[in-house]
Picture 1 (cartoon, one colour):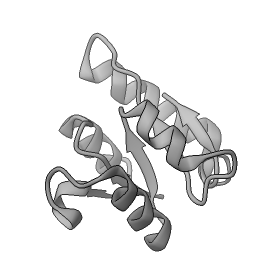
Picture 2 (cartoon, helix red, strand yellow):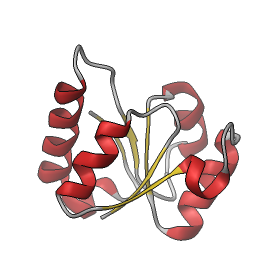
Picture 3 (cartoon, rainbow, N blue to C red):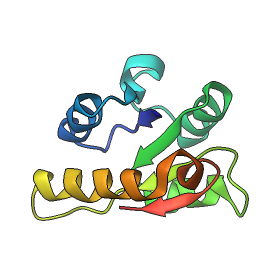
Picture 4 (cartoon, rainbow, N blue to C red):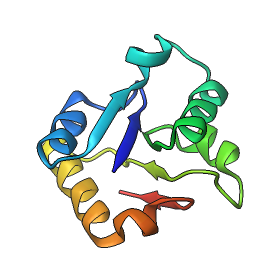
Length: 106
């Protein structure tokens, strides 16, 4: 699966996803630092990426009731390992069809 990782998401999430065979791109790599959420969302929709972010409010508004792509809101945990574990379990359970066009929380 393809994931666009927002600036507020720890680099350990990126590493975990790559190690499990997923394609990841960090927002800063393709759009630069401090990119507006609207631009991040439009890029993800245009290029078929699921968005991973900790920015609940901004992206929930952009996604609306019928998201054009998948959105994963990553909840902060006590450790990065716990964050990675919750995310990987969600991806495994939901699969590509459960993530695409839906809003999920990990």
